[in-house]
Image (cartoon, rainbow, N blue to C red; front, side, top):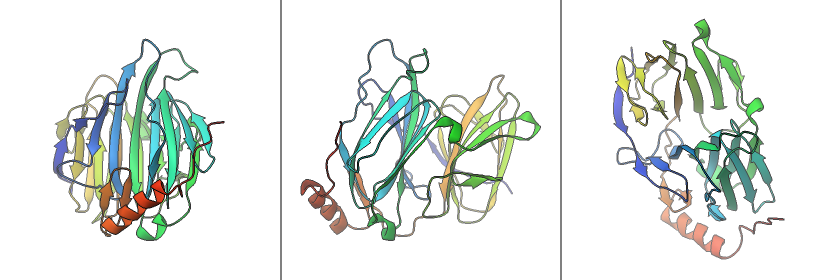
Length: 287
């Protein structure tokens, strides 16, 4: 049985500096897909001069952040003393846990000459017991992202989070969850099945694709029903198309989000702000 579509949306603009950003999750239909509570698409853009894309140092608590860089370079600093820069195809993952301040800057990839940026940022909600843990951090370069070719030379799949067909990401998970980047060649096909009660969404960054015989446009975010079933993805274009597929088991604890914090109660949100203004998250040392 094929899974049915629950809703689609193209999100809302949330630009930062020179970056064109579409906020796709949360949206008016859903607060979360599995543990994923936030998704920004930093749309493809060619920059003709020096960029203005810095967000500045800001706090997080109760979540893990994940930046997946399709094109560009992403520089990370945080108040736990972590620093790294990843380039096109790389990932920045940070478990905020009980509180951290970080600063990320996306720029054109200095290793290439195309001056383009294209990226995604996800927030992954932590279970209550993990929200109180110490922060952690990983920088994963493009060559270290698990990847394999699909059958019949249809394209490839990258496992950003979770596992698939012998591939496993090194990013820690705290519930059943997955995030895949799939690229299908012209006339390529990909089929995947899910059990009951797994929340699944897809996003088409640039070009159209067909899900279970229904065509969707580039820029569309699609959520599917929670019944067991399969998703058949077809590319009928004459060029490749990309798909992000993600989700996991439902988050069953209360979700209270305000600003950069995602906790389980309003009291915990107030405590997150109190601790931040009290200086317990530390400071970033840019040296």
